Image (cartoon, rainbow, N blue to C red; front, side, top):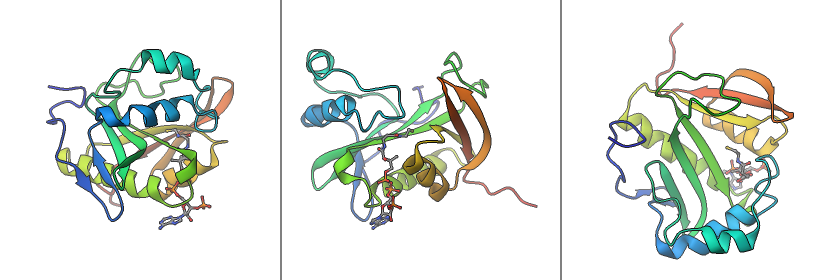
Length: 182
Ligand SMILES: CC(C)(COP(=O)(O)OP(=O)(O)OC[C@H]1O[C@@H](n2cnc3c(N)ncnc32)[C@H](O)[C@@H]1OP(=O)(O)O)[C@@H](O)C(=O)NCCC(=O)NCCS
């Protein structure tokens, strides 16, 4: 058993037209620190962490746990896509039912606007749907995060609700590989 329930982790690397989704490796450490230290990446995520703190604390292989895909473009990490079991204790959690999986995505600002987020997330959702058919995936994002809202719509997430948390309007969407009939 893993944090992703019965799924075996890691899967074999997933290849898309331009990207590879794979497990984190030691060579990704600098890009992880870039991602976590970037104020732009964390504009709607509660703020970035100081670089010197990250240099001290990020492990040799960051993010090595079930559900964390490094997104690799031509051999270099450009972001992460995560599929995590939902934390029922998390503040702002609207659907504390056990067993829900949440999608997250973080890409380095220099690669935004080229469709890599959509390409990587679609591949991760496709893998998830193949492994656990019909199992829903939830997504939380601030409504002010326009790029994230556009990506959620493109991926096929349907709005469940909007609510206030952390001093901002939040959006909860749900995605399922099984289209409801009727
Ligand atoms: C959210 C985030 C991943 C979106 O990144 P993005 O690059 O805007 O998203 P996409 O991959 O869908 O790319 C879409 C853009 O690429 C453009 N594009 C260019 N070439 C493309 C191609 N070959 N295929 C598809 N789209 C392409 C699209 O036209 C679109 O442009 P637009 O934003 O001007 O409309 C990114 O902004 C990010 O990492 N933000 C910080 C982290 C965050 O807030 N995460 C949300 C919390 S879960």
